[in-house]
Image (cartoon, rainbow, N blue to C red; front, side, top):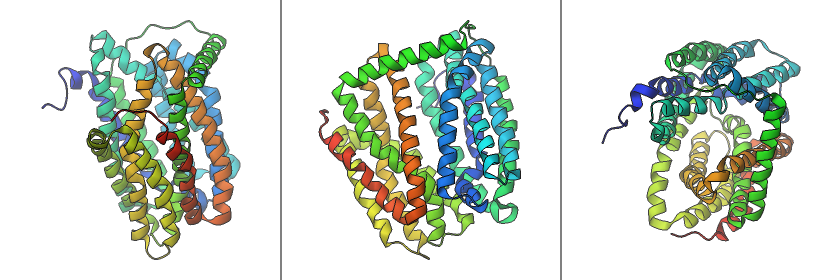
Length: 400
């Protein structure tokens, strides 16, 4: 069986090559929280930066969406990507919290130039060549290349950081990202310019979101699925905030963090394959309940970890995340099946707003709690957020 469908590589090679190299270029991601701590920031400060990023992203989405509709999706994507690269280069030169607030706000704006625009660019390209059916291949193969980059990049970062320090990794990230973005110049663009004003675009977005919320309110199965995702979202946010300082606190050398995330990327890449097999054996419902139950119970084992046993701590984090990685594709696929095609975009828009609100809530609480009780204790207790998920998935009526 061929990996690519006919015409797929010819049309989409710039996007696939970009996905791999851009993920590979994210060398600093494995050390970002440690970097902030080295600058004197608390986990509460870091959480607040991420909240600011979410808020700016939310409000910038509409005006940058108008720019993408008027100037083109390719132009919008390139502006966002080059802007992101330049911001990464400036990060090591920032030493104040206010400076980081400005930086994170600019980064959020740059990302809104990319979100949605790149996917629309790809779809219009495929549509022009009457190959719309390849959009599913695009998502699958983009994910593959992205994780392949994440496997290699963090490991390389671990080899570099003892010699360059964390600061210099951001400069490497920025330079590589700008260089990698030039690959997308080779991808053609086909789209019709829209005449929306920012006000019209904003009104349309709010109207679609309102319709999405109305669907969610009436659909019990969808509400149960969203309820089940709350604890998962909470755990994921707390883990993203706490896992780096936690691993360092139990004895892991800072330079080894990249190796940890490379191994995690391998598990992330192969887990959907395992999930597809298990769904056929036990069904969606049992798999989701198992995932939520393990997420509730296994983090409590982190209470037993202490320095210098960072290998045990790493193994436990892998053990906690594997059921989550295995089940998430099943969760997303079933969520899509619950939504009628005619309201899919509106419902997913409303879901994104809910996710943004949840992120702000969990980060607002999580940062201070982690500072008060420590990363280990915070991670151990964060799994309890998934208790409602167990019951929500248990009440779902799904066929095997």
